[in-house]
Length: 625
Image (cartoon, rainbow, N blue to C red; front, side, top):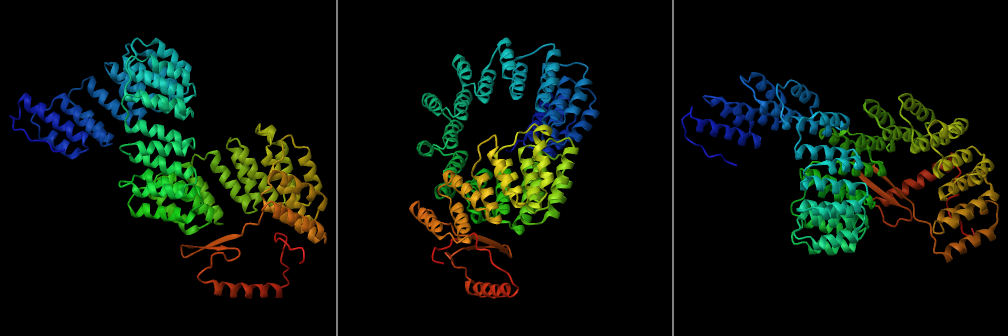
């Protein structure tokens, strides 16, 4: 935007008004130097001149310059104070805003409403209510700001009481109540307010439609959508997102094709929708057709690849995103960290870590928790612990990441120390915490400690053991050779034992050759997961170890009849930032296959020479072998 110069006498009223206008325009455009130049060149300043430049500094996020200017003002009016309060509130500087408010010689409704908005924005609802009660006069904006604060605090009933007391209700207040009711699932009451609205704008219609889709009432949403007099892209996208969230991909496709103009937000919703249904190719087709991609577009495609186990494609997409100079957002960082953890590729993880530091994501507890998981999965526990120790404001997820990390590496004492440190801070453990701690005890053979933690978890943390906790206990007892006790624990479980619990018991039976309990566990597993080849293989090899070949033959026949087959094994390594994938059976030959086979044969000879006996318990034996 270019401002047209106007030639006026420097001291005239018209010249001052024109200069003030130019300061305001430059400020709104973020051109603070130009605004200051106009101010400095003015022969005479009015209070409006000072106020305009103060507002410009706040727009540019330079509160100290605004404060200095405010202190230098020869004369201030209420608008001057309000400009300072509003500027501080927008930057989240509530204490400074309070100081200015308390120093005001005279306040108007704008002053009170700005402070009210500041308290609500900071989540200080109690303080907002006290201030609201002190207000000498209120307008519709004041009422609506307080109404939105109560809704934000999930106090919808109190919000309704305030709404009913409002002397005048505009479309903003009514729409806020519609959104508030929908947020807590009370769509019938939201619809009542919507129907009573004397005038509805597109925002009100969209709020009601979004409320229905948020609560998966798609039929009601679609009926309202079809009778809406004028739709904008937000409305179309709200309806589209409702279908994709509910997995109604065919309806989403139909609606998407009907859109005359497909906004990037709508396209992003379709990418996510296709990804949730496993339609990765279709998601990529939409991605490729978007001419102007935003960060949401790129992160959506990264997420689709990650969720559908296209890990290498997710890494390539994230790399392309950076080459396109698109700043990673929260979603893309989380997705690519999940890929790095899943593949245990440290080089890529370090690259993402560096990107997090440059983009200030290293202060976010969720991304840091995911980063710790990457270093843990890659075996760099020292780095994981360093990041953990340096992070302030740890939440339960961060503590759990560190406990689980030590547990996965069999470092039970270290895991228990973290658990103890967490309790000392006053942080209460959750169900995941106890899964990590019990797993650590199991991997480290700390049966006594595990028993005590399991026994006291309901007393110390008010958490009743779930099937996962029992699975950890069964695994711990099984590893220690206490298979009978593990079976008795399952028999006395207050919850139904799932496949994970029985699988842990069957694994223990394989190690300790307990055929009697193995048969019980295997039969239970086959009832729960008839498609799973694991129980067949384990039980078959237990039978084979006791030369019960007829039973082995029966299991092989049962597998054949049910079309159950063992999935080929898969492993990967990272060399020079390139991930090499190996699949059992050489389904996809590696470019260096001959060298790899030669080295494997050489290693096999060296192992045999050293006296190593291979474990074939996970190999499905043929009856005639």
